[in-house]
Image (cartoon, rainbow, N blue to C red; front, side):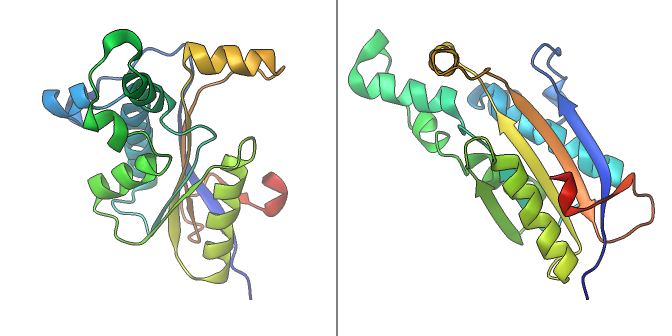
Length: 191
């Protein structure tokens, strides 16, 4: 028998929103080495988990269409010798799509299921479907699900040329099988 799945919390930052005060989450050294997308991802995830009253989720499931594109671009420009930028290991290490879910899981001490979906245009829906299915089947009791993307001028120009509206996303939600304190029930028709 399938269990019901409930939405417990949601935290979102929009493109024009001022940056949150990250000092409670990161040391100055950590913040300096982290891109804006990673800081926003950790901040929204932490806020959503606090709202839901969950310290460590059973799963961290993230959707991202482009991953940490700013770091990817910086690494590739340095590799090609553009802008005379030095080749930095941090840009390489933080350039993969699963950097986001891995960083969140490490910071939370979440040693359970960790997945990243990178299905351009369907990444968040795929992450939601995965979390919903695992909770409904009883494999996990709760999940942190996120949707994180950043825009760079190069990516934005490319998307506009393709007729796609460039958008940034920093959204974290917490899903659970527990109806107590839920905001609403989540069904497959919601995604």
